[in-house]
Image (cartoon, rainbow, N blue to C red; front, side, top):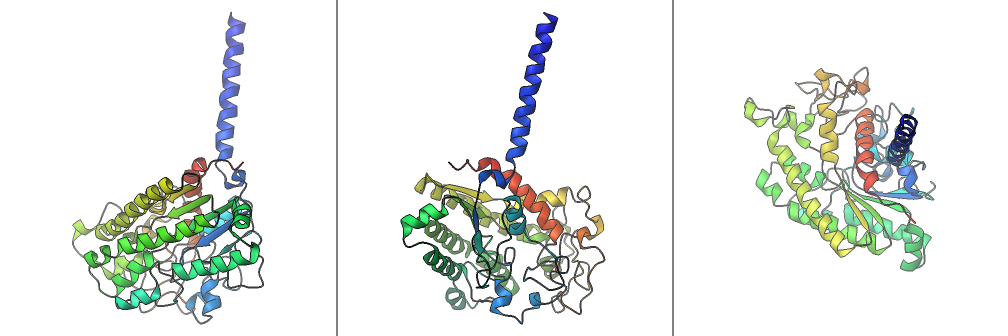
Amino acid sequence: MATFGKTVLLRVLVLILVLCCSWSDAYSLKHRKFDQIYQLGDSISDTGNLILENPNTRFSHLPYGKSLSKAPTGRCSNGLLMIDYFALDARLPLLNPYLNKNASKNHGVNFAVAGATALPFELLLTKNLSSFSTNSSLDHQLSWMLSHFSTICRNQIECRNKLRNALFIVGEIGGNDYNFALLMGRTFQEIKDMVPDVVQTIKRVVEKVISHGATRVIVPGNIPIGCFPLFLTIFQTNDTTAYDEHRCLKDLNALAIYHNHQIKRVIKELRNENPRTIILYGDYYNAFRWILCRASNLGFDEDSLQKSCCGIGGDYNFDLKNICGPEVPVCPNPNDHISWDGVHLTQNAYKFMAHWLIDDIVPKLRCIV
């Protein structure tokens, strides 16, 4: 009986080990066999479109990209972005920007543009708002995507076959619509009133993507902007009740949460309308909060969590009139910081966010058959 008991116990332990290994092994995009990734979005995802569109932008110069190469790549960080880590985890080449006409697009395309808005440029003008760097809104990026599809497939049936193993990421987008409004002095209520239009624009683009054959779509939410040096500087106050436990501005984060709730509602609608398509929420908000909660364990400097690495002046090492550029000091070790330039994150922060998101998303992606 003792021998029988030991044998049963051994088999149970082996089974648990196999299951655990299989579960751990599943936490990677490579096992979902994606052969392409398509990205739409803004500066969180842009791998070079803006600097090809406008070579004079500050992102065209060091210290941007200083941790990657001797010359900037157009990424609004010191190094890699989340989309880069997604591609690496899927065992695919890094995505080339759409506007680089000579680059390979065999494994997907990046249509994101730094400074892009969800709402069309013309609509923002009617609200006396505009992007400071580009007119390439989400609709503009969608037109690029459809133009690209016309070069790889002759009709929607052929596109469905070519794109059935592709991963689509629609966003993060919409953050700039609110950022520009905040910078131009609009009230929180005025900005909150913009959210339905922004979210419906995102929904319409997701529907178009699905109609061309997308079977796996991630729709990210917004990051907690109340934790960013840019807005911590602009809205700095002596009222301690304005801040949460992480010293982030509660009202600004509430705006991001409101947007994210609307995105989740739209995703539910899209799932009901497209039951054969997997549509997932990319929880950028909680991925960022996870880093804040575990910053010291992840190697970040507790004294620099809300300070720009590339910046100068004030409590947050940020000055709106002297933003990161060739003449602005850079911290000795960007890996210590979450914020790169007060508006964008460091490579290290993006890496941890990407890993958190992959762990969250991959189990929800059914295997492609």
